[in-house]
Each structure stands twice: as structure tokens, then as C-alpha cells.
Image (cartoon, rainbow, N blue to C red; front, side, top):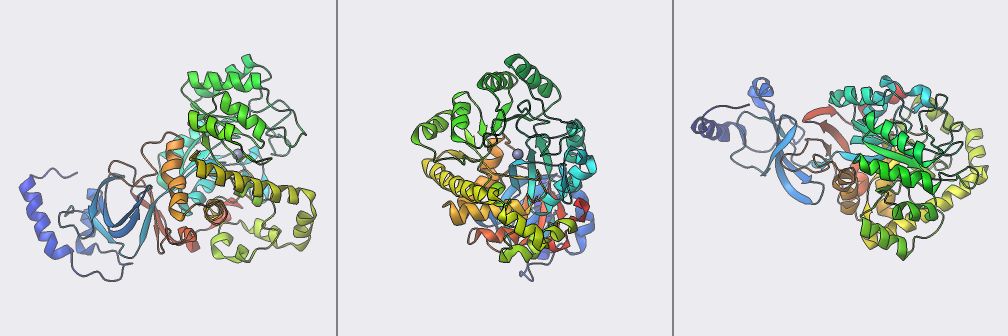
Length: 475
Ligand SMILES: [Zn+2]
């Protein structure tokens, strides 16, 4: 931290004008010059001349001044009064967006082609979070099925940006006895999910999770296509009331309109999946707008169940392949696996669910309902951390009518606000310096969010281009 008198700072800045500006050269050059080593100690970094989308709008070409992990100031490009002791990085021709915020993901639930609670270790959680981070997602909310070590792991991860994206979440979450989330299908041997049968146990479960320090409460309210008992209104109403007593947000997994509508009427804060059985009508839209309920569509969740078996032409792109453990790549290349998957009647169900989800998201966007960002990545091996988020953005733009800018607002500032973060999702003075450097303009084509050159978290460069990323820690 600089403690020099103002006059000296001004003098030094003037000296730097001559020494440190000058013609822009190759934008890839780190223009720190000979003073870089000593400047590194000052903790001041200037990202010069990047085209910045701040989470709400395009700022044009500006310079980001970063100090102690935070954005200190946004200066106009080529400003003459930037801190003279800064480590300067010329990003002319580059694009900077806030690190993405995923409001609905999971961590420590998969390894290779396997899944289950046996993978909930700090190493696997960190491997997932490093992959999210390498793909530009710098904050992840793990909505349930976290093991009992969640609080401990969260503390370790959030203390060191090199361990991955910042982790928040719902602990084990609250489901239905013998119902969702299905313990056998999800591989929950030592089931971390609380499954209260009545209002009193629901309140006790919320209190226990609140005491363990969860960031929000997750409920599963789904009869899994009529195959399982669904959490009763008595249980979820009690859980919501108790959570609000502890000032905790409540996010609910749903699939169908009817439980979603009753959850909104019961005060749930976030509908954590898209409604996929029928079109959303005016009464629910009005109720959500009146209550300020958030909605996370997770478009990718149904698509991921069949799209990789279809062998889309983008299956072989390095951006996706680099996110896959070798065992998952091998599975997806196996003709027998693909045929079985495509012949499964569930595949058509998932296609239909995606179509309804897209139409409903489009309706809610037009109606001005609060939209958050999530994918359910990490819950199962085909819900690929990092890739899923970029695919979600693409689906939002190509098939749900969002402009690239609207989709990026959802995935940054709106996603942060949905979880009540006021320190991220925005590149503004006082906010965390969590951002992604891109080589192509994401506002021109949202697929350009894949042109990742670097990811910064808390003012540190934590990842480079995706090609250098190695998914085998997840194999
Ligand atoms: Zn989920």
C-alpha cells in the first residue's frame, strides 16, 4: 500500500507517463517493463485498454485498476493518472467480462463415469472447482448433496484462489423420504440429504443445516414423473418459514408447474430448475413478479441426457474435449452406448422437456421475471462443469431469445444478486477482481465466451487458455 505524500505520487506518475505509455504493441505483451518485479509487491495491477462488459453493460475500452484483489477504479483508456507503481498488462484488443456465477451446480459428486457421495472429498471438490474456474466460472453454488465436510472444504477452497472457483452452497439439502433426490440413482450410500416426514422434522432439519453454516436451503419437490413420493406442502411450507427465520434463502428443485406454483405461493425464493411439463401462465408469472422470485432454467440438464449420444459436430471441439475425463470420452465414443441412449424412451421425454423449458424461459424473459443462471453441472458425469455453462448461454441466445448482452447479465450480475452477493458479478470499484479475458467479442456472438485467454480470481491470474487445462484430475 502506497503511503507516499501526494506530491511525490504525482511526480512519479508524471515520470511514468513518459516511461510507461508509448505505442501499443502486440496486445499479448505484458507491458510491465523492467520495474515489474518490484511492482508485483505493491499488489497494484492495471489491465490496460481492454474492452470491458461490467456485468450490466459495455463500458467500451477502459483500464481496470486492481488492488488487493478488488477493483479499485475503472479508468478511461490511456488515462494519464494510473498508479505509477502498478504492474501493467496491456489488453488492447481483448475483451473482459466478470467471472460467471453459477447459481445451481454440484461439486464432489462425480469422478470419471462414476457418481455418488463417495466422491465428496476436498480433492474432488477442488478438481471440479478448478475446472469451473478454468472455464471462467469463478463462483459456484452447490445446491445440495454436499457431504458433511462441506463447511470445512468451503473454508479451505475460499481461502486460496488456486484451489478453484469460490464455493457456496446448501449442505446436504432437504428431500423427501424415499423420494427426490433418489438416493439409489444418485449413488448416495451415506445419504447426506435430510428427509423430514413432517413439519416439525422439517424445521429441525433447517435449524441443523443453518447451524452447520449453509449459505442457503435446498428443497427437492418432485415426484420424479409420478414414480416417487413428493415432499408434502406441510413439509416445504415449514422448511421455508424456518429458513426465513434464519435469514436463509430457499431454492427448490422442481420439474412441474403445480408444485412450482405452490412453492411460490409459499414464499420460496428461487425456483431452481425450469418448469418442464407445461406452459407457464399469467397467474404464476404475476405471483413471481410480485414476490421477486428468482428462476433458474438449467436448460442444459435435459439436453445433456442425450446430446452427446447424438454426436453433434461440436463434440470434438477442444473446448468440450478438454473438459472430459478420458473415461467419459471413451464412453461417448462407444457406439453401443450411443445406440442404447438414443433408443431409450427417456430420450424423447428429455427433448420434450427442453422444448418446454426453452419456451417458458422465453416467456419469463419477456415478462421481466427475475432470471438466474445455473446448469446442474457436476451432479452427474454428463453434466460437464465449465462446458455446461457456455452451452447454457448458447441455448439462451439461440433458442430462448436472449441477446448476448442479456444472457451475460444473467450469468454475472443477476446470478450474483440472486444469491445476495453484493461483491461480485460486477466489475465496478469495490467489487472482487474476478474476471475472464477473452480474445473475441462475447457481445457480438455469445459463443465467444469460449475464447478464454485467462481467468482472474481475487486479483490473481488463476488459469490460462483452456487448451492448457487438464481434466484428468476428474478421472
Ligand atoms: Zn441440482
